[in-house]
Amino acid sequence: MVFSMSRRRFLMNSGKAALSMSVAGSVLAACGSDDSSSGGESVTLTYGWWSNGPVKDNAMLAWIKEFEKTHPNIKIKAEILPWGNYWSKLQTTVAGGNAYDIIGMAGSQAAPYYEQEALYDLSTLPGYQDVVKALKPEAMSLCSWNGKQFTLPVGMYVPLLGYNKDLLKKAGVPFPDPVKPMSFDEFKAIAKKLVKQENGKYTQYAININNLDPLWTMLIELEGGQVYDNPVNPKKLLLNSPQGIKGLADWQSLYTEHLAVPFTEQVNGPWGTGDIDSLLTEKVAFARVGAFTFAQIEQQKLQDKIGATPIFGINGKQVTLGNANSFGIYQGSQHVNEAWEFIKWVTQTEPNKTYAKLSDVPTNVTAFNQMSDYLTPKQYVPTLTEAAKYFKPIVMTPHQKLLDEYTNILPDLASGKLSPEQAAQQMEQKGNAALSSAS
Image: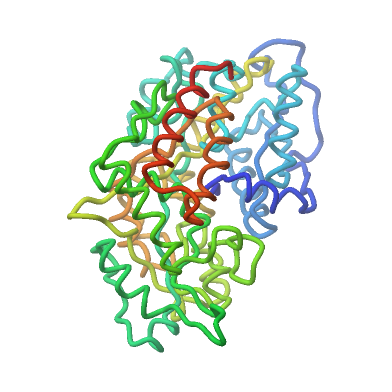
């Protein structure tokens, strides 16, 4: 349910109307400050998540109802807010000591909350070891910080490269293989056939990479370089190397060769925002899709219009950068045991399958291995399964200043104002300064 959580998406989504509703029926008061209900009394847990539109929000509420049916002494008061509103409220309530009992956590936003230990260490709770045996290790690693397990993953964000079949047909471009990724050079060769100009103005682009960022990080890794000493809570940037410079040059070339929608128009122009909306403009051939868009594709009957392939590779190497969405328990919750019951439930096979239908790649190993049995449209499942094999984490850091430095440097690299060599030097120098500063 979370995507590539850029500041641009934050601004785009923050104006949507809130959805705040209770699925608990009557709201019963919690019993003092005890961590568990006694004598069969009901406990009401507060629950927070971000909105993904009415259809998915209502499906999530129905999912929560299923938990309540099997746990009659636990009621959940769920609040689902627009993306920007949710994180603003979470920041305020954590600081004020009155956050949700059950906190929905997006991988892109998690690091500051992990760093300040705002969440309960789940590894200290009963049955923890049995629960985590069922979960994918690569997802688990994104939910721990400094040796503490602050959340458990419910879904993995795994992006794919979607394409408009009609635009490829018109250009005489064969559809990419749904499992074998194109090489970057192969992609650029067909991309040149998909760009159109009229009267000196571009009317069609090959790709909108807005929501595929950090594509530049992926390209550096594909060229054999390394961006961070560790993408989870990095202490040092290492991208100023020949391989790092080559990866930045690859990224820059998409813009300077006019294959990609211009950097400044990726969100606010007529080209969509880098998801299915871009493909439906009939002006962009490639953009991001994933499990989070499957429901829309099915509802709008777009299977014959939109194809999918893994993101391109280089020299036979493949990398899919993603993150994990998860649930944690607020450190100040008065109902830790009841909240733990919910988190244990969502990571079980059947509940995790239901969650996967809403948005993400399941983190339960059995649910993951059975995706072809229940995920629809089925034609995209082989692509998703293949891309997930090469999953690596997008950077997680509490240092917002590092991300601000990228925001300042990347537009100049895209426009050609900075060379890849200059950008690599600035990103490493300023990035390391940001990492050494206070959060």
